[in-house]
Length: 474
Image (cartoon, rainbow, N blue to C red; front, top):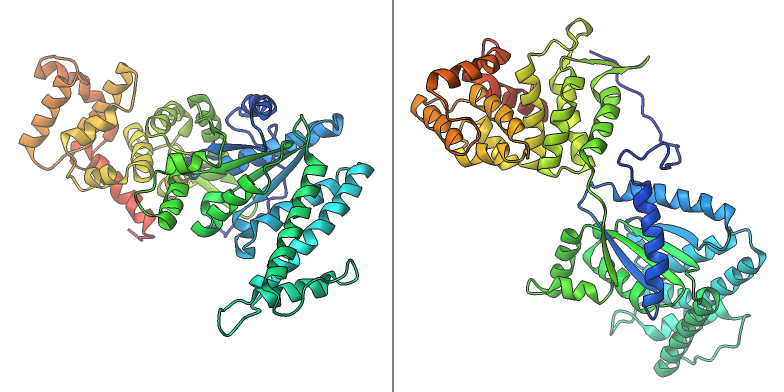
């Protein structure tokens, strides 16, 4: 058994030069220009939603983008401050207002500009009053009658403020407590306006992982950004999986909520994170070849019976057709790495049909699990197989993959298999040739399966992958 690899702590600063697999630098530059332009067309703070499904690489992109912008600001200090926040990491704090203010203040302090450092001090002072009220209310200062006592919270805040200005709250004066809290929030809003208001964006706040937060916290975050940080001079970019955020909103407001209209109240513009091109997917596959399939380190070695370099084009086609995210592609390689691990002397010796089928089934297990299981259990319909073939836009590639499935898949019923063959001809996947001509053209694929041929080729591959997924010893 190979030695267990030692844990690796990632300390690399992500940049477009050392991390970008999908050529997103150009997209980031266009996004910079988009933010600068759209800022002119909103009355308050600009809010942009950067949308992408879970695992699409939104966090990685934000890291690269932020580091690129920080480097650019070192050369040009007129560019806006760049702040990156992970909303999910601050979920437990329960207060998006103070989370954002704290990040803005820290960015001002680290700016290297004395004027901005002074503004940071003023912003923090203004935030303290609001913070003490928040702590007082959220910290368990309870009333036996109502659960939370706003008067006690106000008194707690006043004790903390004492020495900075005279107290104005008397015990039992609910109106005074409310007015004092409102006044502290107005002072904080004024400090934000004094610091960041301007024709050009002075700070760009990137908020990640909003869709992973508790539904109530995610909605609070949207409300806070929209209403409290609505300052012309602040710009926000929220990375979200809109499907997940939609679920959060409906969990709070009901299934009949028109989410798109609701979300439009908070977000001025929607931008889609580009889906990886086939060229980008190939670059990612080349990376995983040396980090998952073929690994040679002192503490850990692995060889693969699959010659992945012969299958790069297949990977690009399948991943593009199934719209797999980068995280899903990583999972595909993880499955292949385990399923096709072999001794060094057997490296690259896998029959080529098995290699193609391993990639296809691993991808289907991640991107289309229902069809994957029907194929593996011999229950796939003609429509299932045609759905897979039609993932490929090129007619030649459709015929190639159709031949892989016809020679490697069997339902166990000769009449059904014959009908399947005829359906592929009617669908234009295979040419209208005589049975003898078709058999001759498919014979090379049958050889690619070896001794299993049409009996167990694809279903055997399914069993191997399922064994890996369930940690089976078979």
